[in-house]
Length: 199
Image 1 (spheres, rainbow, N blue to C red):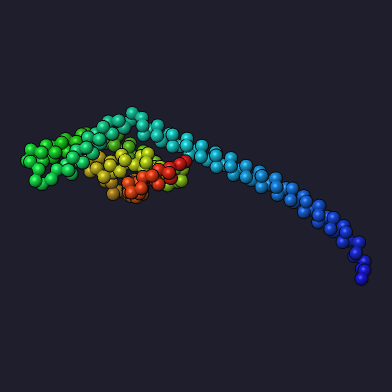
Image 2 (image 1 turned 120 degrees about the vertical axis):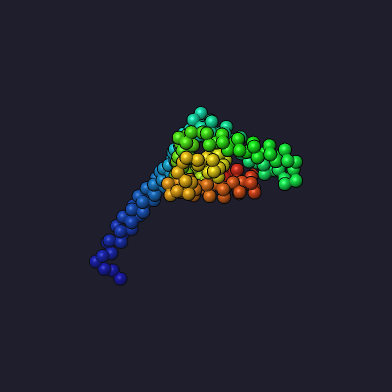
């Protein structure tokens, strides 16, 4: 059965074919360009994260905190040593360990509050960068966690500074909780956790 509209079918088929061909060609270009865009975006994002990490390491490894690191190393050694001293250890061993710890604590307290505060502020900066997704928590712990945790837990570090449980150090405190989780995971399965480290 023929109608007055039969003449449209061949033309419509031709137009539809042309449109489908046109769309198909452009979809291939869009997918190809989209894939390149995603690849370039990911590469550029990794480079930006790497640059941010490098800047943080430059500050962390610089000379600004050397005195603090030295004092904290003495404190950590003395703190670990006194934990090894048993109640039945000779009196002089217990006294020496206690004296070493007191001296180390005093050394930490003598680090100027400005330097200790600058370190705490730096760690909060690392925390903000991590929380913003520029570096991962496993990487933040692996690279900055040791001193960040030990300073936060050391009472003498906070001498003459705002109380560590102050709202103004809340980011530092939250960050330390996250770093402790990462520390425990690293201790439990170092091989698996090391594989997670990337930009």
